[in-house]
Length: 299
Image (cartoon, rainbow, N blue to C red; front, side, top):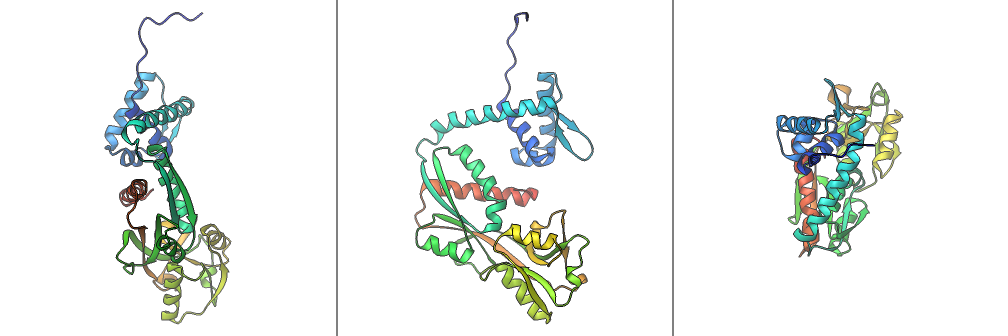
């Protein structure tokens, strides 16, 4: 039989649990520090305090990575539930009047990369607001906003050609992506994988190939990022992608590989006129996601 406790158990601090969850999700003290707006040293001190309180290590650390211990895995479930309960309770008082439905649009690529992060955080801070998502081409998304069937959308377009109602979130180069160790870029005519008409990346790539007089053939066509990556990773073709989309499994190709520079593109956000409070709240979360990306390179 366990002996009764003669002293109260220590209370876990939600601020420290938030840092703990951020490290577990990013796999990095540095990235977590940016997420919780603290310095890396302050984050380290928080985890040290947590481990001293529990008398257990919650992370395995080495020079290259951070991973959860078995005790850390157990704590992660509790931490997420405690933070969720806190958000739910506070939201009843802080944002009681923000409720409704927000219709959000996005191109496929950013719908896959950005929206899950944004909507997860939005659901945590605004649990009474429902979000409907539409994935489509930018030209169709902008028309939907004009027709009032969407409240807010992300759009891609060649740099600096947006109308005045668009808020540019960021710009970056479009580059040629190929398989690591692949040889598709050496073939003649050049096999390329492209999106459908209306894609800013497609337009820039074809203009660059035409400018250089490079022979090419469309070897693969897909409106989805997953399809484009499949073509690249099979070494069937090269494809124009945003520079930030080049991961460890792809390689950036350029002039030294016989491929022309494509240029930049921009991502913008457009809202319907007289946006409601829930729509403005979604817009704030989108802006915050791209501000984090600008600082850390991760959403």
